[in-house]
Amino acid sequence: MTTSALTQLRVCDLSGQLAGAGATKILAAFGAQVIRVEDPATQGLWDAMRGVGPYVDERRGINMGAGFNNHNVGKYGVTVNLRTDQGRELLRELIAVSDVVCENFAAGVMDKRGFGFDELRRIKPDIIYVSNCGFGHSGPYRDFKTWGPIVQAVSGLTFTTGLPETEPAGWGYSYMDHGSAFYMTIAILAAVHHRNRTGQGQHVDLATVPAGIAMLPTEVLNWTANRHPTEAGGNRADFGECAPHGIYPCRGEDRWVAIACRDERELALLAKVLDEPALTDERFGILEQRLAAADELDQLIGTATASRDAAALADDLVLAGVPASVVKSPQERIDGDPDLDLLGLFPAVDHPDIGKVRVEGIPMRFSRTPWRIDSAAPQLGQHNHEILGGLLGHSDAELDDWRQRGVI
Image (cartoon, rainbow, N blue to C red; front, side, top):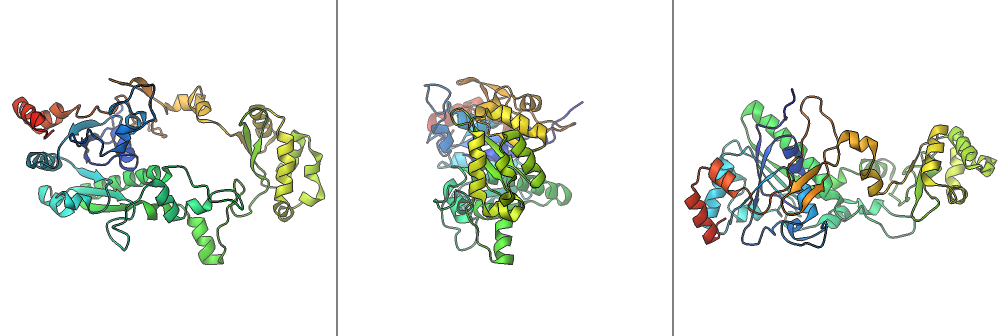
């Protein structure tokens, strides 16, 4: 018999977009009751993901965004207008029956709305409050506001990427939003574990900029220990541990193969598969020589791979004992990959407006407490009756009155 690991956990989720929504999506997949609180007065758009694409077709609207659906599957959705006295009281009632309150507003926003940590503790003494913003709630940068690409730049991640003698490339639009979501998940679970042992709640102050810095341990160590600055190396090995190490063109449009040779033996095997005897020349005999001649080495390999089919070449190299892979596009990973089919990494959900769509699952398997994603993201205010009525005990008449007055 299987059970969900977090069925006893209730989360009052004031977060959104990618950083917060990504964390609570993981909790919901393992059975937590995640109650997503949104603003009816702005049509839910305090979470920008509701109003932007991608979309599955030409239809548009606050319930149609595929990105919002992907990051909010398995959650309950309620609307509460915090500009009204009754709306603030409803949020207090919801916090009082929750284990966790989480949000990813800029520092100070929750305090201005009357729901800082001190107030949360008055409502529920053992509450766990996890905040997630760019610079955290203390320090000289606490009042600064930021966005995904800026977090990457400030943390140093952006500087580490790109080709030599070109501008830094960055790590994609919202890389650290996803990264901080994982940290946020860990923070929530660690705080819940502490509360279960001690009865004590706490505020976990998560800042995405230092979270980004934590992803650069070797670069930071190389400077502090060796005074070696970070240099953009493209796809080459970061610290000269092997050559060749890169991405090489193959036959067809935008087709590539990744190849890494860790020693002379693997280089000899590569030369045999590519039928390129020049790779075994004395000028490439030891690692130091190969590193010094990396441009020439890559040119030889790229010329040899350019006429080859990427998938067939990768298979030949792996069979010969050379680390290699096709540089796969998203559609190659998602459609028909037997490994992902076995893992169930892209389950389908039925959304009332969008229809049947595939979403991202959780990349792990549990033998006793597996994750489940079988319900779509909530439409705006979809579960007002179930949560505000059923859980908090308010009558249909109250809900109707609040709806007419814009409270919910």
